[in-house]
Image (cartoon, rainbow, N blue to C red; front, side, top):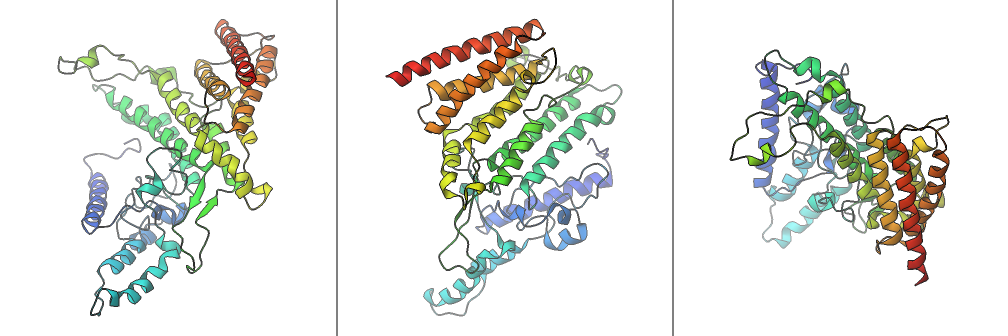
Length: 430
């Protein structure tokens, strides 16, 4: 581990045993007919879950049936239990409902007691949502940002930011901790890929706040009942957008040292049963990896279903001030992704990561402008407006000093925007 945990130490045994204990409890829960509970990870704060005295009796989450990540604190911060070590309040409640002996002569006679137990469903510590609520990656169905696999804490967005910082900690210290004389660099490569993937997962889940809707299994007349659907407040959506701008779409994102990238060697045991390993790149395709993370989020933010939900929020929010707008989404993303072309100075420097991201963003705008019939009309008009303003911005930027690659990139971007705008005019005319 990057933290320096010796795999042969008692601490390592304790770490593994803690995970096995949670897995066993989780799987026994399934044998008792319990389903996953992906909202239970949100009932405690991040501060509470780093208090081992608290979690030993209350758990890291409300249920062993949640799928939560290893609870890691930042370097130098207070570290609590790594894994769920006890049953949570939801587990006791659901087992009571399913298995409590009730002195009744018929199934119908049990109903009053069952209704009494079930009436507690709105208690905060008994929060519940399962697989169909978390969804399976389709933006139309996984709309609740508080119902996820592998999140933790009462403010998941705060946790995702924490997760990104943990990945950055790994990048900063992995060489000093993982390199051992006489051994290869494969552990370093696997750790790098894992940390980058964890950061990407955290940022992808952050994007669920934008166009998100909290959903509750509410019934009419429930104690302390709430509406079954509640759009995520605009302030929280703007916060999520800031997290994405700073960590995924900023010119400062993904700054790895050349030395680290050139240590990303893979196993050197090719054989004819794994022929693919001999005909694929042995070095790390870092541009493809970074772009895959960025594309994953752009695909979600520009998904027609998400755009439609944002458009709907104008009439579903309690007041106009509580609505997050499509205009804000489109302008914020464009400003962040093309930031270099608006910066003051006599030169423009767009690195290779950024050129790849900008091309992907341009493809999205063009696709929404001329092809994707499912995009709401406001989304289509905003994408066209984005192309018009971007074209003028890039023409102005071309007056500055820049590398040949940057100039070719901007020239090509203007040409593609021109073609899309002409096609859009013809499409609209007919």
